[in-house]
Length: 90
Image (cartoon, rainbow, N blue to C red; front, side):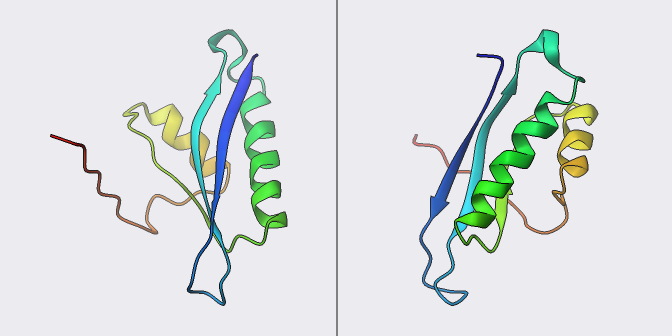
């Protein structure tokens, strides 16, 4: 495997019962980064989300690497649309 992502389509009771998507575990083999493979897999993931009727797609990253954030913006994601909070079990 050289690239992967996980798409979760979540049922919703708002927005005319339109589901939304959460994308996680976006990984491209380090040797193949900056080859366009990441943009390809993200494009396909978003196509599947839109085909499933999702009205939005969200993802979070813990990366502080500016290149990671630049990549997500280049894929059409906005860092300004939502504020994310995370809870973990104690």
